[in-house]
Length: 59
Image 1: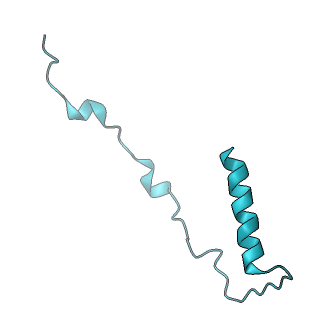
Image 2 (image 1 turned 180 degrees about the horizontal axis):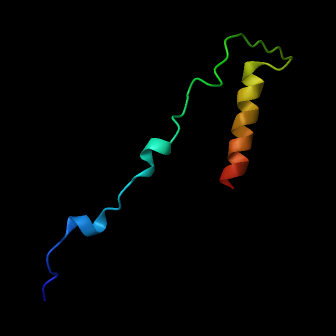
């Protein structure tokens, strides 16, 4: 049983709309600046809390 010949032109659809596509500006929402965050919680406490949250997700 044969599959017949493969005609690639039947599989491709013409794309005439490529000129109408607007380019995506990846820098449109770039911001220069600084962010500072102060907390009374230590890094060790935050890491421990994160570990607890991950353990709950595994259950």
